Length: 529
Ligand code: NAD
Ligand code: MLT
Image: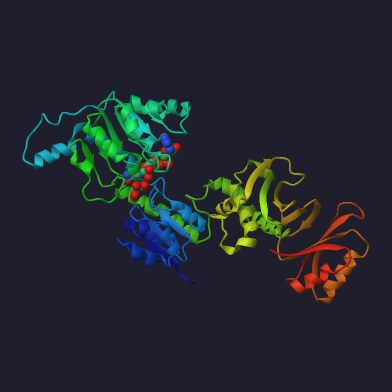
């Protein structure tokens, strides 16, 4: 079996990489410190790419990668990866969100304490031969107010530790409820309330368009005089020019920075200010965190390469293990219903409506929707459609996709109905899993059927007339096509009817043409599932 090539372009913990080295079917290619040209060359044949924040995985890199299927980020922030480009190419991105939370929170608190007590400046002064106790009088953390912008994993850990320092904590986060704040013994506020009230402000949001330069000149103007700023999240969250001016003007008493807008750098004008203390992006640089993120991301990459669901997808919604267990049996059915539906018309697809009924109404069905879309889009877009890009591709073709849930399931324990507007018509197909019998298509448009969704199917729409079935049977016999099963449904006696026939081998275009020539046959479609 061909080995999957796993390219690693940032230094990862040796201990953390051990499971990858020991895994069968994987060839590790560790190449750190690459130039852009070297990276473009190295990524060409890689099946998986593993990075920290040092490698910029740009669109150019993603497009140079001919076999790439997964990008693993050993850490939290994925702002160094072009997620849009990865999603478009159907490349899954996974990260290791939990492994460095503790280290990053501890580093933030250490930076805040060092800032309050001028520890780095005092050491420097000692090294320079001075014993100067007056120049480094600090302030206590106790009874000061800490403003936390972004109360996610790290923000919340920092808030807890600050409570231990007997600080008052006020935080803002779109997901922070009054109840949670109360539980944590902190105050929930708006961004403005937080920055106006705080003596220390620490930011812990991701870097995204909405948070870029969140802390800017306007924000500094609203802060208390003498406020101290801590950033152990991402450089771009604070406008560095505005911070420089705010420190020079005396508005900000000091800043502790672990991250910068441009990294790495040699010489930064903020570092010329004695009120600024800094570390070179060390928040997650502990033995424990590095081992943990490398193990976590490595496991997810191996899961993916073994065809198993990943735990921490970034460009796919993550679904808990328990939720996944409930819906996993329906993955194949959802994809087949989509593929079947795509063959019912040659008209362009506009609106897709997927209804989950019965027991599925309680489940997180987003992965099923993606599978159904994958099946629907594959007919025209080919095999490069996958779970990761199915939604992106639907959006880019202006196909509206909606999900509905209902406990009413027409006698089935669970039912998935995929309905699509195709040109001026609407078509639908419904399927279920029958206990002990497997998947079944139970409805096609308005006709009730009972067909196993696999193998070679023929859908024949015809007028409900005596002899229609016989003529089709005769012609298939003449062509030496063996019928495995046959189902007939009709709307009214003498009205429109449908035949669903499973046959033993693929029906060729010429044979379809002959079937279409039979009297009272309106339409013949061959579907291979
Ligand atoms: P997280 O996703 O758990 O938390 C981020 C929080 O920010 C979320 O709760 C989100 O709702 C909130 N948020 C988003 N936009 C906001 C806004 N405009 N205002 C207020 N809150 C907002 O992430 P995390 O694991 O806690 O990581 C936080 C940051 O720390 C990330 O930027 C990550 O890259 C960075 N990080 C840095 C280091 C380091 O070495 N310095 C280490 C780990 C993580
Ligand atoms: C992260 O986002 O996980 C940190 O910045 C740490 C790192 O880059 O490794």
